[in-house]
Length: 73
Image (cartoon, rainbow, N blue to C red):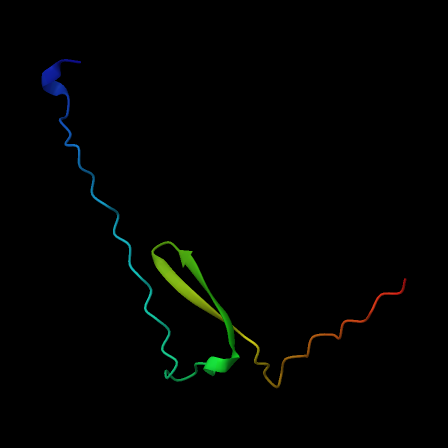
């Protein structure tokens, strides 16, 4: 290629824009009590960011987890 057809580049690159997820609003309707939250996981799907809240609360319609029995030796 001839030097006149080469693209000139500058030494700077633009940083990718990242958006921070908003903090959880514990006073919003439908949010669990703060003392029942055991963890929060962020999941990304494309440009969307989802916060998954893990709690120790159980609804009436949910079955309780089976009790762990000791193993025989």
